Image (cartoon, rainbow, N blue to C red; front, side, top):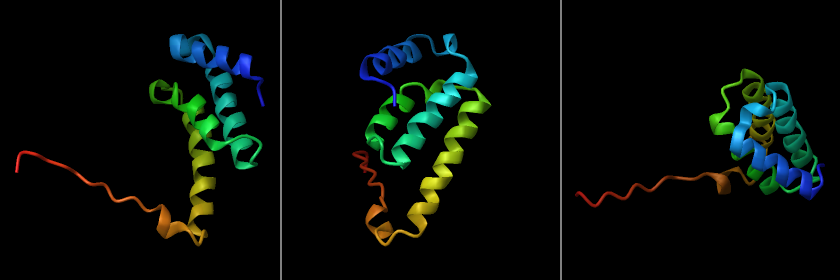
Length: 98
């Protein structure tokens, strides 16, 4: 995976001006981080930190195709996991107006 200094500079640039990095390169960053986390070379939190710093603003279909391809892998792993019920989250909506 990328060394800490380079990853930090990369993340800062993605936050500052994501479009200065080509769509193909952003897609590759997503692929690198999610592949490494699925293979347990890095913690998922590290992949999440890098990707979530820019994906919500990325309009490139390349980035989203890559992200969704990996998400499908995670989803399929969860479907056969005996811990699936423990992962279910039920939102609690608090409304003071009642």
